Image 1: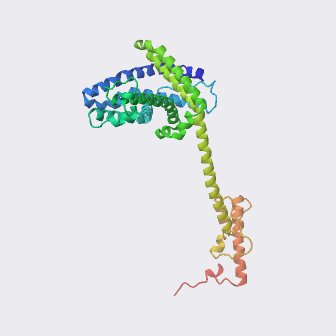
Image 2: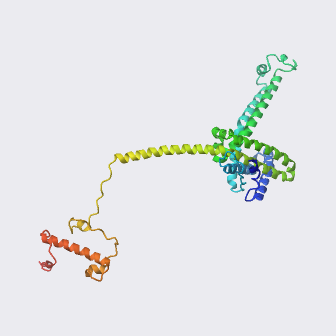
Image 3: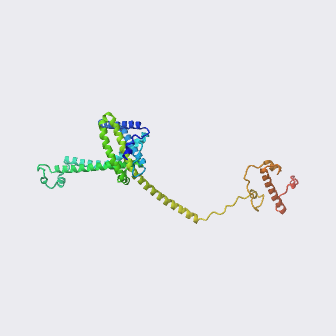
Length: 391
């Protein structure tokens, strides 16, 4: 795992360009951001330039988040990642890098918020004590004892609140250090959840982050990352004024975040597989319900009856009566020879003319049968000339 992460900065489509851009962004984030903070204290209107002042730092954060995503994809959910060598992604889609960096910064602020709120509350309480708004004597007696003279090494002239301040201060230091250690361990897991899900709320879900943080692969990767981080900073620190150290810091960050991604890949893939299985069960249940309802509807409803065939046009127009089978419609519609219909069926006509002539003969035979039965009172062709058109 460590060998694969160390090879990541060199495995890129443009390793030199990526290294140069990352070095410049790291250097600008160290220079521009402090200058902006100092300028804001003197000229408050500079607050409106915050998006530009924090742009190098946010783009660098977004790139490191993309490195974690690449590590997760390379790990592919395998429990032991040894031979996988991720490739450092190039600096493309800077707008997306900016948004991802902003999400990373907000996620970090959210995890540091409880510590900041607690320290701020204690600072406000200390300010009230210093201003005389609150009497700390009852609290000091409960912490240090009922009588400060009973404490070893404490002079009777010392105010009773002074030993309590020392005890409370030591307790706050221990709690703060413990919180920062837990933050350093949980924050990469939250970043991995954010990189895998792509949404800020994914990094704030206790179940997802806890699954990653409690996995053995992540614990090993985090330990290796801490060793690489401390070793890399110690080696690169003296060369920072020569800009070589800045490049070294960027390389160390890429290696560390690659380890985060490789260590979290198994837990992230496991969480994704559990979610996909749950979705499949829900989909199967829904499809089964709909399928069962459709089957029951088909079984309960009567089937459609036989469809009547189209009646012959001669019968529909009254030129013939239904009897026997209906002649099928010629397959080749529109290929009838019009000359054959006029001149009759000839020996030298084509197939279309023969079929048309046969059809005309059949109709004539039907008319003859009607005339023989005496049911047709219409005058025949011979009597048409005998009709008197005169007055």
